[in-house]
Image 1 (cartoon, rainbow, N blue to C red):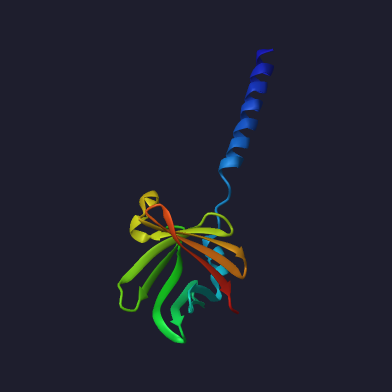
Image 2 (cartoon, rainbow, N blue to C red):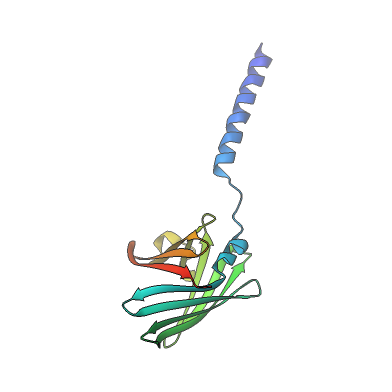
Length: 164
């Protein structure tokens, strides 16, 4: 009788343990593969008569990125970046330069198949304390939304549409 009770208890415990493990340990997202969703030319209306154009050109296992803001047919801001998957971090790293400004280095990771987070690389050890954070989501293969957050408050929302 004691053996049957013990086996039943053990069986019940293992069933419960397997349930908990399956709920809390989903397979890791393939960050390098999800990065490929950015491929192409994206456009966003930034303000009155101002359009942002973001070209994500495949380069190796990442992207050569080019960004420019155009107002009245004239480029008013431009920059370049390089995006790549870092296997050690299991995250995407971006280094970018805007003309007239310094370099920025960021780390990005997908939290689902369509949603990602981007923070300054310097804040990687403590992402919850990052002074700047971007949350993004692919609404469809041709539409993505970015929300810029500073000190915990949304300060800018960009709605990008694929141009090609």
